[in-house]
Length: 154
Image (cartoon, rainbow, N blue to C red; front, top):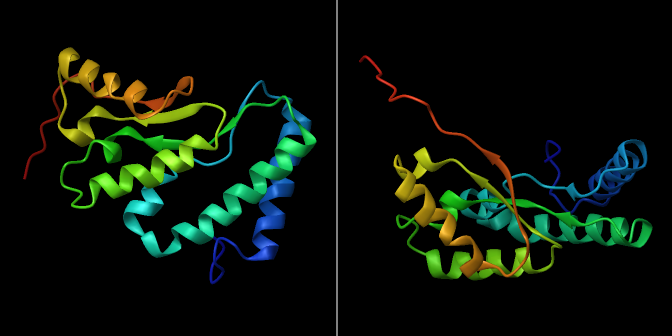
């Protein structure tokens, strides 16, 4: 967010939409993710979510008008969709499902260690959740996990 401005500030919305348009014109991508780990905002700053949705919808609407064949999405983090410590998890999931529903594909960031997952079976169980959450095609946009246990000395 631009310092001191909400996500739906008209100047900020226009600037980001122009940036995305120029990016597509220059790179001519096969698909585009216009927001990274967007659901983190709903979790960490829920009061800013509606303003962010205005920005997101405006940018995606403009891009769809100009590039109607370009698949668009915004990524969400799998660990927040599975976070049992979120007391409002059911309501949170509904809001994110609505958000993902407006996209052409389901873009997901997955870092298993955020959930304390370490085995192939645990990874598979987490990933098995994705098609139950959305029927959209799934794209893993980011992922990573340490190759060896990390020992931190105190």
